[in-house]
Amino acid sequence: VRSRGLGDVYKRQKKNNQSPIIFYFCTMENKGMKYEFTAKVWNYSSTVGTGGWHIACLPKEMSKEIRENLGFLEEGWGRLKMTAKTGNTQWETAIWFDTKLDTYLLPLKAEIRKKEKITTDKEIEIMIWI
Image 1 (cartoon, rainbow, N blue to C red):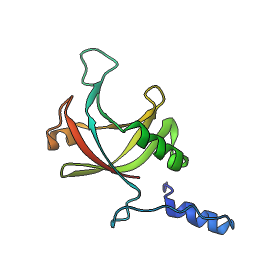
Image 2: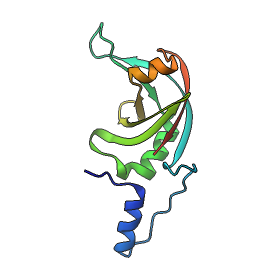
Image 3: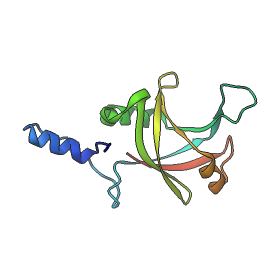
Image 4: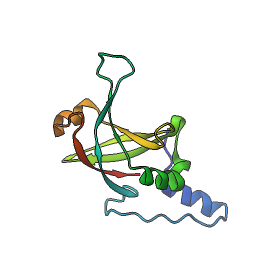
């Protein structure tokens, strides 16, 4: 299954004689729209005593902008595929929209946390491309 990118949206609209949506890409790598932010890592666990998820929240204003402009790319449960980078580590992942917190959540898997020495309550700088 091939995921649809912004280029597919443009081609589909051109084919249907619709005005194209114009996106401004912020990187030479053409990975998509680039966002940068700093976030404090927190731990979520639904069961006491388990490791749970380590998460960084995107700023609410940034989440609002992303949802307004790119929400049509969301999959089930508000999942939005993207590329993330912190420190020297870059990976393919996704963010999920949390309606209770009104923001996107970026899960940080153990491999990334270990490479970058990320712990709960640590503030980290993050770049994402959608």
